[in-house]
View 1: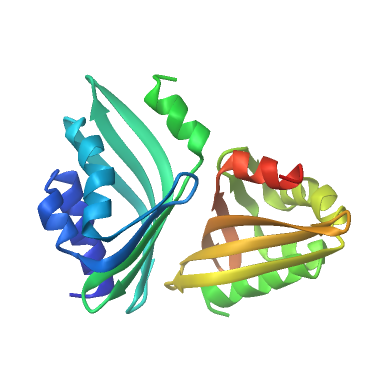
View 2 (view 1 turned 60 degrees about the vertical axis):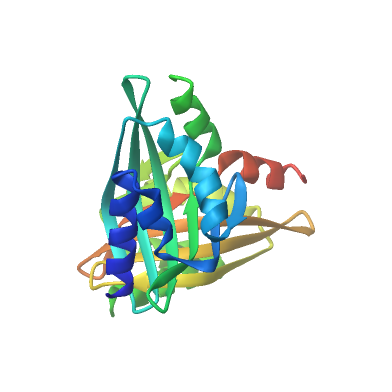
Length: 123
Length: 123
């Protein structure tokens, strides 16, 4: 799989709420950095961060507007949509992924924290 | 010039504080979107937004950590450094550029607004 294929597959697993399949595609030392919030490491760190969040969603639909990649680095511009409590929450993000040996070693998402907090609170 | 070359040249002009040379590389209808703040359009919109800011800087140094591109879309992860009032201000951003006929038609930067405000106020 190309680096872009790894990222596409990873995001598809997340949107299917299959966290096991998703974290199988990250390295043991993977850094997952939500830039304005902070970073966690490894499959367990990602599972602990995303598990409760994804568990609280009835659907996820992450729309990729643009994606460019080389053999190692993938960047995309997305609108991450989450259905929670009967309504859809949307967040515009730009993501960076670095792929090593077919697995994601770095995932860094850039977004505006107040925009996310406002969306979560029904803003 | 490739799309990546156009963006590299554009950013080099900005860092040299040569706004005339920079805006010569954007389309007449260029959209410049600082996502958490808002968007402006065209060379004049960019000039009015960036002119006072760049004029208040004694140096600019925008470090590109990662950049990927195809023939039209360029994305990069940067630390934009500005020297103002004798100190350096840093902001981590992810940028998207769409190039059309050798000029930038869309420039969208993703970052956390409170992080920027805190950096500007000396935090």
